[in-house]
Image 1: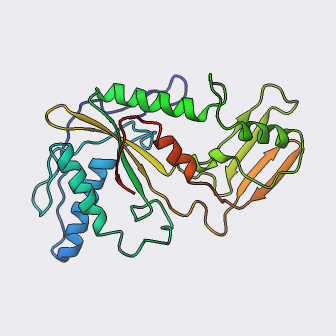
Image 2 (image 1 turned 180 degrees about the horizontal axis):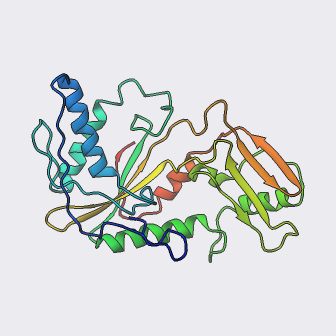
Image 3 (image 1 turned 135 degrees about the vertical axis):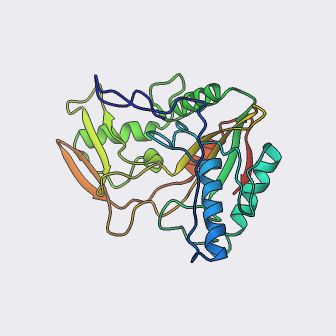
Length: 265
């Protein structure tokens, strides 16, 4: 669950990988049958797509639901059931969201969910995700991507006028630069609200029989609300721009995985 992400010499408490726990829900007698079903759906979504703790959107702290009892729905026990449950969940939320983006991260008709990799240990799946993301997003690789972002950062540092955002902004904010060959080495790119979490959620799912899946969910939504902006600053440049982003940048990253199967979107 994001181990080691605390300050120096500060103790970090965590649940070890492979730990099991049970959550018991006691619905109010006043709950309607619809509300009870929504609670089941929320528990399934958490246990099939989500996690707990620091860096949970990067796959750390993934929760794999093993059993869901007491209601109408059940936890999946294999890949086929996993896909079926996800698609059934999405049928109930996609009817009215074909065109408009949800205001916050949420499942909708605009979401994309992929099984990106499988048949490896959970640690191997996390490592594969991390390495693929690093190679895609980082400038200093054998085949650098996003040269335009690299040049954009130097333009900001050198005080040149800019009217666009870096392509990688879509992965979330802050998105800051530390430049090696500029007089002003720091370029900060932040949401005026302080933070915009990544819309791409990675999840490692472990079934009872030991089989695993690496799942990615792109929850496309309003990137920044109307009153918000992206604040760009260096010693020579300060500007606020609207948060218009290119969602295809994340989709191209999802396409990097050779074993991928898109199950929604």
